[in-house]
Image (cartoon, rainbow, N blue to C red; front, side, top):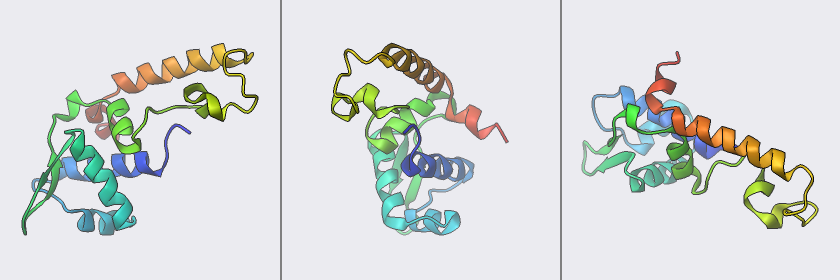
Length: 135
């Protein structure tokens, strides 16, 4: 699965954070986006661990972008939010998820690998800035 809710919530949050002139807390973001606070908080923490966001403490604290949107790719964001590389098909990344248990001899494995390579390149070349300017 390429984009799970974690990726979607990360991108939605980054859209709002990028437009804000002050740090935003997970509670405020969860209310604005109507998302579960605890799940969103974990995603924001992962983005902060990856230095995409910076966390500010205190009563005026919250999360702010720590990187220019032109310098962070969607691949990096998704990897940070998911904790793993964005895979179109699970069987490409993990041989134990191959339904036949034969990742090395699968007849469609070469196609899936080429497809994954193209998706990876696309996501690595698409920046947060480009995503935010799509509207």
